[in-house]
Length: 257
Length: 276
Image (tube, rainbow over all chains, first blue to last red; front, side, top):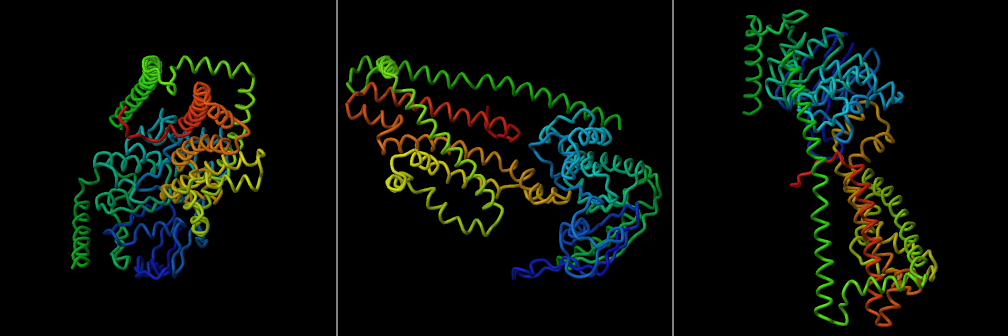
């Protein structure tokens, strides 16, 4: 379980620059194996919140607990999938996938055989010895996903993972992620600014507003699992999509005026 | 899902053809350089014979002069002595240069502390230190090593610092998210990501080290190829001066080629925008 209580984060307070309140009293509880989407306009602090849970950013006030323990830094119970993939260009795919295991001190043979299993699992069989530059964006993010899954975390933290991909690749990746989540459910926090993506994937959508970043509303997605690829044909999908779009539009208008 | 798998297989064969195309191009790149050397050699020989200037002998005369020097038995020991100072001075510059450069690149305080000295010495002609080193260490080997070291050290530091500054911050964040320690960050992310820049520093450093080797010996005038150079030019033996010069050029080419070879081995992954 992930418990975020009254969490606030202010940027720029240390070196005297103008302070920016990135997060303001955020409260959120995520159950085990729950899939949460953080949805909101840019600047709403959703990535900041994700990185706080990852232990990559220090927050100012409030408390953040994962599995009952205070977050003091990154840990093997959480793994991050990055928006721009963050693959090491000098290392082949199996080395990239095995990177987390390598840092943990696992032996070369063991970690590489584990990496190859995961490369197969994300649909990249046969690419273990290729280099990232030979792969398309979608394939690179599959590597990023395999690398995160390799350390067998309880929680996956995904920071707009499909944001850099074209629409078709994005759909394929969403379907594969749903399938992987069905096979082996993990707690997922998924940052996105795409409404459809949030509805398609998540159990609950956390709608955030910008400046300062706040939790505006938490919406239960009315679709169970396993979730059909045709979920967008349901009337409820369109209704929720319209509802969220109205909310987001209002926020954009408010922040720009 | 089947369609996406087909797509993947296509991409795979595409990547493989690209790979074999690159191997073919590697063979192509030797002949322009080879042709340029052959043209240079032939032009030298012809011009030397037709012009008949005393200070521009044809290449064949220089080869004869080189064989004469070689037969006296003094060339090889001097060459080995020069190479030893090159290797020792350069090795020290590589180890200390990369070490200091990485610390400066990583820690702002270290960078601010050393920066004035590095900046000054990158642009200052290192030759001005030679009289001082001469006064401190005398004509011994220590002077030769130190001169080579100083010629190569500063550019290696500067390139390493630049390389570390250019490390992709998202890779650092990625490594931290997987629990990397500071040492692991250095070894597994920063060093490899900065390597193309560091290797460029090592290449420039090597050519500067060869200059340092010869300049130092010219100044001391007692040891090494530099001393031979000075001796023959004092005797106005232009063929032998050029024979020594050719030896130095060959040493410089071989040592630089060795660093280039290493560069290609370790940074072959880096993308290039050059037209092949």
